Image (cartoon, rainbow, N blue to C red; front, side):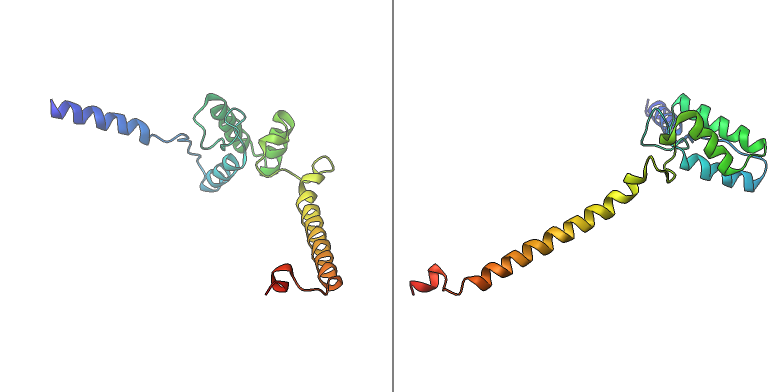
Length: 143
């Protein structure tokens, strides 16, 4: 009875240990490019996972497309461009800079500058209030 339970537990663990993507390409350089590309592309169904890590069928289809394009001799940039043209910029974990998304790249800097200006204005206003009020504080007057 214990042996049967142990065998069942080991079979269950072996199913968990199975890799999501067992793809092996013939050339080590192609394999490295494949791994890099599949970690750069977002799964459209999971949305917070790379297609390399996602177990859903859509991610498997996208991995197969990447594999086929690599074997066809396309460059990494051509594959990224093809995926972005077909699925939109959202598929890229690192979106490209364009006029449509320029505000995403510039917003943190603008917010930082605005925050620094607000802090500087508040500090100047406090210094002016302290300098304009030469009298003692209420607590100090009673002592």
